[in-house]
Length: 225
Image (cartoon, rainbow, N blue to C red; front, top):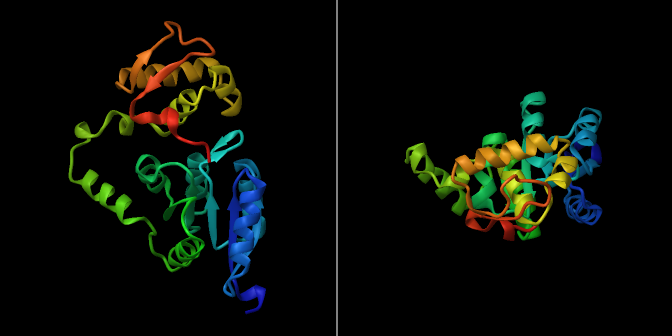
């Protein structure tokens, strides 16, 4: 099939080796091609209108930005452009948030090559591509009141992102720099989550840079994608 007739895929991931691997996988398919790539949200938003993709693959953890925020930006700016989140993060923690943000699919990076291609084709056909496990969780969530949800799921996307990074040992100063936020704003997110019972133990009274604490559900064990 000629390239002009192939479906166009745009890749957003801050790891060059991941982008190269996805590109090699996609380019092997006769009906698919990679039309562009970016390592961060700003570059992606600038390049997407220049490359006219049919679908975008987005990693959740990007340098200086949030993958979830990028998904929301794409949804708001290009309502008909489908997005698939491809990440190392546990789908039961982040999958539903990704869908609420506008993603049409969620895949763990440990999935097979065939499943990645299948997800792309399914989303291009207007379908939503999620694992049975994630679909079951979403269905169960819809049948329960908000008050019964675990504390971690009552956190906002930004609060969850901040606590994941803190759980990995990142200082509040480093988080502020990575997310382009003030330290005061980062501390505000921490305080909100404390009020939402997201913390098991806090070992710093003033939440100063370098704060260390334990987070419910093992967020400190969540690997960076």
